[in-house]
Image (cartoon, rainbow, N blue to C red; front, side):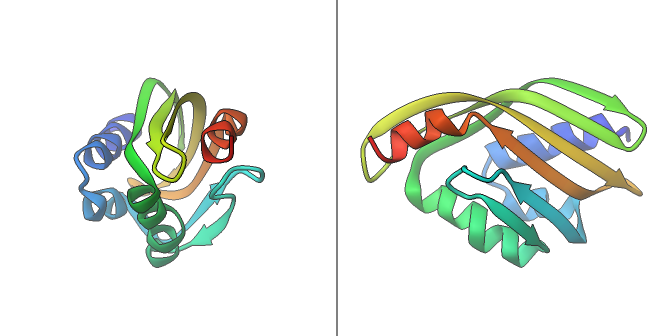
Length: 129
């Protein structure tokens, strides 16, 4: 299976709420980077840290948080995705739609490093009006 297809499958699993399947596409010691200035900004290592600091918060703080890639580019062990985040922040009831770039580094068919580069201003407007 190509690296792009692995990433497409991870996005499909996330969309269906299958977090164990998303994590199955990652190395045990994955380094997950959320951009500084973003609500979930930080660097997290391993599945437990990602679940605690990103996935659990997405599930509890948002109504229908969607991650929709529309373009995937792949070269060697690198995959980049361009797409859209959207959702409604529960505490403010404000919806947003923002662009993102996701950068994946693959090793032996699994994600070893992930970096999210969102339009954090759009998210911040929904979180703290």
